[in-house]
Image (cartoon, rainbow, N blue to C red; front, top):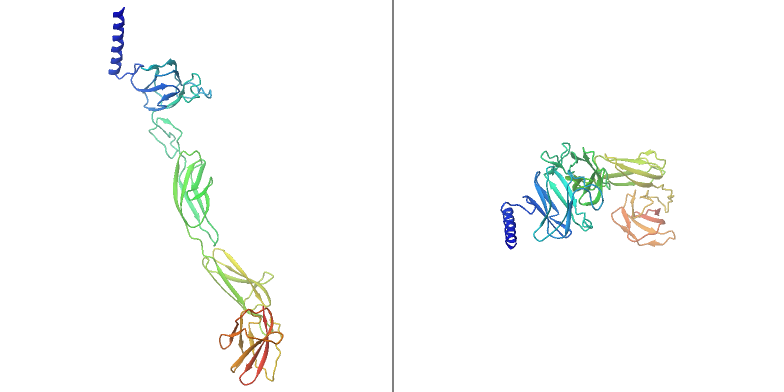
Length: 391
């Protein structure tokens, strides 16, 4: 009896040594092995070539290999081919649960269906062969792929159209174009915004545009430059007053914008007015450039209704303009040197008058609106009092 035990031990040892010398695992086959312990397959994911054999060796616990239906959801794994090996108790030397040769490329999933082991994380995957996109119409078609790994990319041919801002204060429009009919997401890395239509309102500068499939399978980039925004149109307009002797005259200048600028005067009825013949009223002055950008200002034309009484023995022919005025006035019509004094409506002389040139005067201090009088005295003794309206 003792001799038989010794012979059996030697036989088992010889068998083990033979298997090791042949590169065989406890399942008696060569190839990739997966070790099972408590609640795990190690490695949980393996990559093998088509036709390779995979063995499961159990070192701890009671485990099986279920490649049929998920023990968690109950739904079929939909593996290219099914496989199942019943439960085997593990030991320190490793017990063979089973082995399988995978001859059909694809992705396989499996779990341990014993005692809630799958729910505890005992799941695994096997990727057989080289996966890739097998659709010739896709951007990333791989003619060497052995199975379709659902990575097909359909971004199509990408391009873009830039519509520059036409007017100051506006933004340019960037429109991404693609030949793809798939659902795409467009984003700009410097702008916290994305959309599915590929349209963006942007200021000047360079932008990095990212185009990706909504499933996140692939992406591509575009480098886009947006042009400068046109300068603002600056419009300046003034007018002289209207009187019994003449109508008011308007003048206007404009700069900036794009191309030629056309300036038009409109009266209160919205009719085009000739700026060289402006009657009393309010006028809208409009400037429009070649892009159709418009700015406008309102310009009043006042009527000089202040009577011009003559004081003294001789009328000098004094002309004061503008009248009404704001910050200053000029005196004309006097042939000889003259002096000017300023009086308020009560006849009190003011010292706020400042003579800038021979005929131009300004106010050195703040003057309330109202009617004032200026006294113009010639060196030959003639004088004239002229009403002056400040507004």
